[in-house]
Length: 490
Image (tube, rainbow, N blue to C red; front, side, top):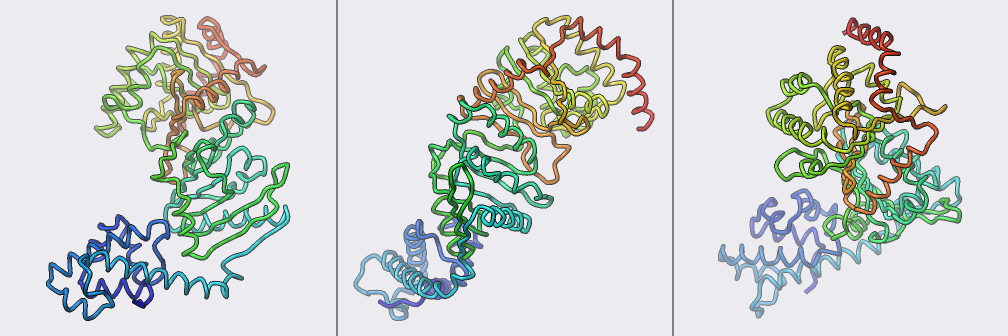
């Protein structure tokens, strides 16, 4: 049985059985675009899954042939043994033989193209410059949502300056998911890496990072931009890139991606990226507030302890689904948070920005408080602190390197058992997800400890309710003039 190539064989079977591409795609569990590429020769199925794919297509073609009463004609037209009792198996073997023929043929001819499809770059500066340029061009030129799969470790790559390579990239029409390993031992032993992790997530709001325990991710030193390129890199000590092998052959890139993909492999995420947390019964946010101790590091305005009229205004401008979530949150906070032990920390940069703009991001709704609403909010916070002495308010004073008009854009929320991070949607350039859910309990503890330790910093200042009242009275004329100025400009 000497078959044609895989594409010609598959196309011939599709033509003979009059199979529909969409039906065949459903049978093998792939998008119809994949089946089209298999049949026109621009792509081969992954060697990891090809036997299953051929088995399923063989059975499907067999059912069509028998149902159409074309078996005799089929056996005369195709090099299939007429003595077999299992036509589906014979067809699958026919497809497998065609696959091997195409694979061997492409390997023999690929050597002629290696000079353009495979490159080796050596030397620290050349390798770093090459990777930086490759990532920027590859990601910036994506025609649809992309995935950057990094089989390496975040902190190690941070030491090389790798994450700075993403700096010039601006995504407006598409999204990028970045999957990478994270070493919890390193984070726990060196809190500076927790700060670096936070700064990276805070800086790249347009990207959706997903982290895996580095012990669960094969340490293959691979960087794969799905469907575009594969890079295998080598590091020196201390961590510096000194060599990389670059592959852009489409079939090889897809084959390597499918072999190393982290999706549907049982590898558990330790930080997941999600678009919303929800407020339905028994969902994440409802469960999150089902306790009495909280720690909040807030950078997107101060959305807690809002006056009732603010909730009413937000619900009027929200969709029915959002309004219901806002209403549930209002009730939850009145019943739980006002009687809970809560520690709030806000960077001064974010506090100033909120005072000037009134912007908050409540659940999944963006809202800007008016000048009058902000004044009532200040009073509501102080009244709540009178009623609940377990509300603690602290600020992080700006360092010399801080820009008070930029500030941070990633908030941290913890109930001491679990936690999440929320981006400032005002500074998105695309449709990236808004939240990071911290799934791993140990990682949550590490991040919580990092933010709690900010209280030991000389830049941290905590205020009692009486001290806040005094500060407010001291700066009230300035606050009033600022609010009136903003109100007049609206």
